[in-house]
Image (cartoon, rainbow, N blue to C red; front, side):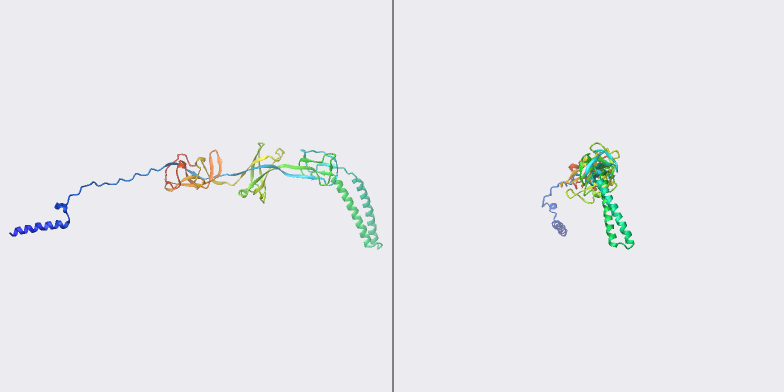
Length: 363
């Protein structure tokens, strides 16, 4: 009897422990849940990057030049004026002739100047005798100092009159003051010239000047004695040096006048010919890149799309400084830069791309 009680108590303890553990399935009080398979999430596929072709470009020192249009101009032009009035009696030259310093351009008639000179000389001789006599008498105390001073004044006036007439006679011979070419001639034989009117215009063609106007932004790049070359519309090519830089700008155009002196020993180069002048400037650092890689950003800036760290795209503005058959010279880039040469129109700044480097060597 005791053993049966023992077994019943043991079985009851087991049932209570099952209830306490909450395992109702084991007791048959709850249905067994369905067994569902565990699903493991597969990794996301890697995003495909846009592929571009790029090339490494290096900076080079480039000899730049300033291209300006101008014209030729005579180095000097002198109007030879008549200094006295008269009719031209002799004229041995005409317009276009080459002359040298001292050549007689034209001779005016003397009119009554010879007679006036003879009269003035006679008056001078008389005044000189009077003055000498007064001076001797003054030494002997027979004439006053006032008398001697008065005679001296009349003598000086007579001497001045003679010199004046001699100058007028000298002015009748109008001579060339410089070497050059006659580009204007009014002293034809029989022509009446008044004082102050030109007998001839002489122009100096050697050296010849090429005159240009340079803007205020470029004027500091031009120096005296800098070499320059010019191509004339006539087909001639000339070289020279900067001989003059205007210290003041033209008020209307804000440009500075520059003169380039060009040798013209045979006077073959003419005045007033249009010229295209090239002024070499100091070498600058720049990149030579294909013209096709240059584009615009959203703000309309000119530039190129480059590759920076982590294969990201970056737009870099550039300044165009020259054009050649090999490409375009630009400034504003790092010394070494990787530029997209294919696909640049389809990518944006900040975008990560798949970069394929060009087999062509860096420029």
